[in-house]
Each structure stands twice: as structure tokens, then as C-alpha cells.
Amino acid sequence: MSDAVVSDLAVTDRPVSDSLVTVFGGSGFLGRHVVRALALRGYRLRVAVRRPELAGFLQPLGYVGQIQVVQANVRFPESVDRAVAGASAVVNLVGVLAETGKQRYDAVHVAGARAVASAAAKAGVPLVHISAIGADKSSPSGYGRSKADGEEAVKAAHGEAVIMRPSVVFGPEDTFFNRFASMAQLSPVLPLIGGGVTRFQPVFVGDVAMAVARAVDGKAKAGATYELGGPEVRTFKELMQLMLREIGAKKTLLSVPFGLASLMAALTQWIPGAPLTTDQVAMLKADNVVSEGAKTEGRTLEGLGVMATALRVELPTYLWRFRKAGQFTQLEF
Image 1 (tube, helix red, strand yellow):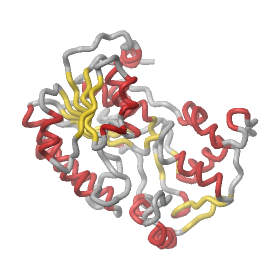
Image 2 (cartoon, rainbow, N blue to C red):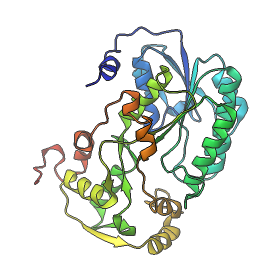
Image 3 (tube, helix red, strand yellow):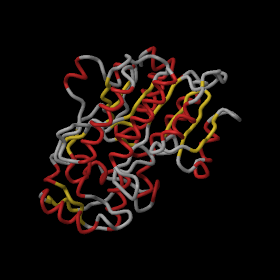
């Protein structure tokens, strides 16, 4: 284990500092892990969310008074400016996987990202912006295109912002393995969109949080874009097979062409909690892995001194709840 990682693990007794970090989107899946990582480092935290009354679970992640939850909405620049006032650094984690109501890709990923970057630039403080490996102006999905436009907006407003592009993020509250494991409990068949050949490089949520924390510490190169992936590259089919082994289920994996998958998604995406949207089907047409350029230039987890966590280490810690007898299920390998 590297010296950098060892030092990161030895921060639990660090006193609360005068440095205040504003975290936008801190109550989400990734957000709660970022808040915890920064709290362990001793930062004071102002967590800016749309619904503060639903974010009380963040308070126990730090000392009494260390974590303050405030109301802000990235669609309203005035609230963003208020949340940034007095901060020493800003982290923007806000994003949506599917468009609903007023939560549109352009409003959140582009205009919202611009508002946060502009506020941080006016305050003269560092910014860490979370994007996605799928960010590409020529992406077949609106999500990917909006993420790329968001990065462009952030760079224009704050030239020294650190941008981080994680691959599929996994962990206890993820919407990837949990979603398909839940589907496996109800259906004898799981779809392999496009034949299941799309490649992913799943990254553990704790590792992404550590990378963000190290960037706030000043360990990342200003203005650089980092690509965050785990130690394994797996196809969608391989990930489904791994998930099924972990929950002890035997299901048929059925190849579904992209065209048919898009049609099915179009018919069901309006239902709350729908498993797939047409845009998510489009996202599956492109691989989601760390580029060779990022690896060569050290713009990766390893470049930030973070040792990537393997799937086999973390998946059993939360997928056991989908097994027939929970943690008492005897698995066959």
C-alpha cells in the first residue's frame, strides 16, 4: 500500500479545521461518501442540497457542528452564490441519470455546472467537478453530450477546476448492481442490451470519494481531467454473471438488440422506477473505460495515490441481501 493511501487512512483523529468546503449534491449516493471522506480529514462542511430536511443522515458523519446542511438548487445561481460564500473549496457532485420534470440534463449538467463554477471562480477558490467517462459531445446519449457540454462550461468559467470522470460507480447504495439484482429476484430472465458486449471499468464509491478528498487537499493538478476506473475491465455480460454468482441465482441471460431495447424502454420509461430509459440504452452503445491517454499521463486513481478496490472485495458486503437466505446462503462457486 502506498504511503499516500496509508496517510489517508490515518486521519480519523484530525481536529476540525477552519477550512470550509461547500459540497453540492452531498446527500446522494456518491455525496454521502465524499462528505464522510472530507469530514474525516477535519474539514468543516457546508452541504448544499435541494431538500435539507431529507439530509439529516449526514450529521453523524462528522463531529457535532462540523457538517451544516443548507438549501440550494444549481438551477438558481443566487442560491449557489450563497452556498459558496466563505468557502475555501467547492465540490460539485450534482447530476441526474434520467430526466424527470424540471431536472433536465441541460439544466443540471450544463447550466447548473456553470453556475457552480462561476460562483467558485468569483470566490477565488478551487473547484472539483464530477463528470463521467461517458462525457462526449458526439455521444449517442443526451446524458453523455450534456456531461461534455457541462465540462466545457466549467472550464470556461473556472480554468483551474479539477474534473473527475468516474466509470460506473458501485457500492452499497448503487443503482447498477442493486437494480439488476432486484430484477433478478422478480424475473427468470435478464436482458443483455446489445448482446452485453459493452465494456465497463466499475469503480468503488469509496475510492472516488478518496480521489475527491485528495483533490480538495491540493493533490490534483489544477485544470486537469482525471478518469477514475477500478482494477478490472468487464463486459456487461460478465458483470451480470458476477452479480448472479454473488446473489446465488441462476437466471437466463437473453441478448436483446439495441433497437428492440430502445422500443421496450420507450414504452416503459414513463413509469416511476422504470429499469431503463431510451437514453440509458443509447449510453450502452459506447464502452465506459479509462482512456490510454489518462493512464499514460497519470490522470487516474493511481495518479492521485488511491489504490483501486476490486469488485470481489465489496460486492459481497451488500449484495448478500438479495440471496435467498441472506448472509446464511451457501454459495456455489
